[in-house]
Image (cartoon, rainbow, N blue to C red; front, side, top):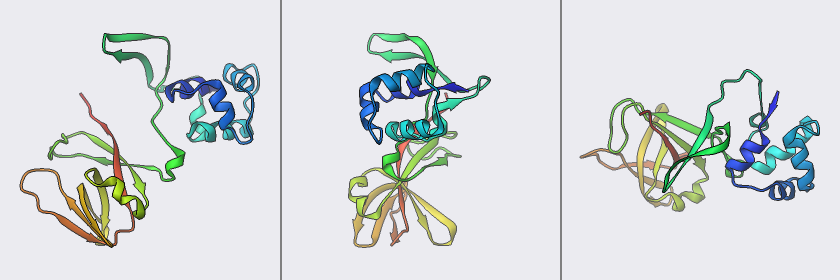
Length: 190
């Protein structure tokens, strides 16, 4: 198994010291560095502590020697594409602090700003946090196993108003939905 701690840490923009301090209980930057480089064995307990500090699932920190994980090879800056000093694994953004898993919606037909083939990744939020989602695209469950997707335009009491994407769509009002998921990321094939 290959350890991916450094790749995840650098993609999140964290230093060794920041990860060490975020561990529970805190540890030293030197210990995190030794675990990253393999100079110290990565036990299950350490893997869980570091994963929690980085805000990822523990299995994200390791991969098989023969894994075909996508690789990040360059970064795009205002002066063009720049090579990384060493390729690293591309890690799906996650955030354990958000408390809910990511959900995905596949776009089958072009609708509004979304194109056929797009994937919209969303995260569930608590109903009391819906004020933060006003004017954001959301997915809301409806009775009978159906869903509403569109811009959250209003919340009054237990009622939420959703404006579907696309021309001429009418507002959908849902009473007391069990949850709302807010769009976090768009994945678009080129």
